[in-house]
Length: 124
Image (cartoon, rainbow, N blue to C red; front, side):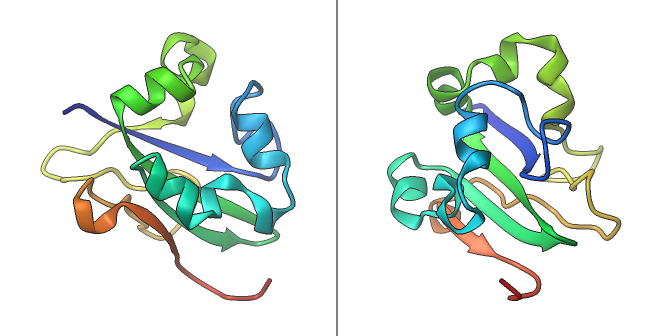
């Protein structure tokens, strides 16, 4: 199974693709994003790791290519959105975030990791 890694931040459309479903995912009140809804994430069989950065939330999404092709195909087909895709460096199992200064890695795609996990400060 081919796995796609992509990173989003709800701060603004410079930090997520300016198309659906991303607009929907990021326009909710931060607490209401489907990417933070355990049932929705498990139903879609993806792995979401999220954490606060300053006054925004960052999302590291690990998903089967079939999910991306079905739910958010523009991520793969629109070249201007390729900047949100992440790839593991040589010798790494999963990629690292590009939006945070510290090394923050994506979750590997395993049965145990399907779901959503919050990391970092619990300030909201």
